Image: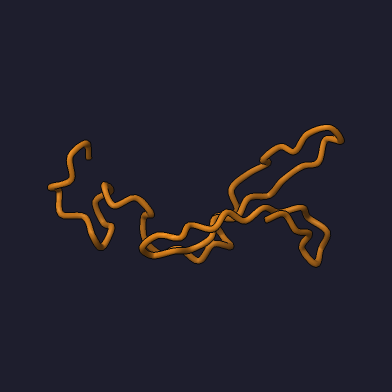
Length: 68
């Protein structure tokens, strides 16, 4: 979903309907004929842990996942 913040920035949120479902927020730029990602707004997503279960430190990481 695209939206404007109260201070006028164009933002995009991507919802993740999985375990630990949190949205990822991105600051966007409207170039007229295309949208561009400026940066991931990590200070706004409220995530206190890595999102991928193959990362040590994630609450479900056990080292047994193939490909991790």
